Length: 109
Ligand code: SF4
Image (cartoon, rainbow, N blue to C red; front, side):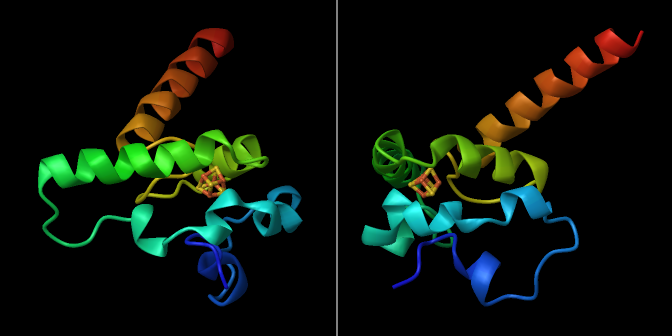
């Protein structure tokens, strides 16, 4: 069985943006390997309450995942535009990326 995130690694054409150092076996240890794939990605036209509930359930899986940090960094570096990765929603990842960009800009100034 594949994880919700595994197809992008193992069955799709590899992304040219995929960093080799994060293309390792971490996804084989993913806690989400044992969960429903639908938990991590929104179905079309998902009501807000259902989305919040689904995302909370996905994050609870991430919280016990041994590769949370690797997964999160992968999602930030790609960047992955959809779904819960590394315990963060797409909106939360955008916030993290914005903070990183501002910090890098400040350090470069
Ligand atoms: S951190 Fe979450 S999304 Fe990432 S591999 Fe683990 S369970 Fe799956």
